[in-house]
Length: 100
Image (cartoon, rainbow, N blue to C red; front, side, top):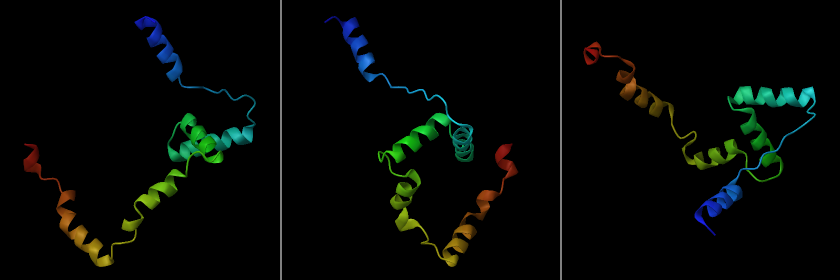
């Protein structure tokens, strides 16, 4: 097989599949658009996530991310927060000399 044919075959095998949905009712369409707007995501991304979750192919991203960082959640006391804020308060100040 020559190089050109093998590259075309590879492109065909790696081609991403597309699905077109017809006849979505207004209620479903509005719900998807609302979710996309609320999450600041594209319609395509939201639909893919909804399908994957509905089919059990993808865990809820929020939940899996939460579990990933669970050991850090709620671990700061009020004293820890106060210490952090005191140690970083100068980061909120712009030194005009730095911009001359």
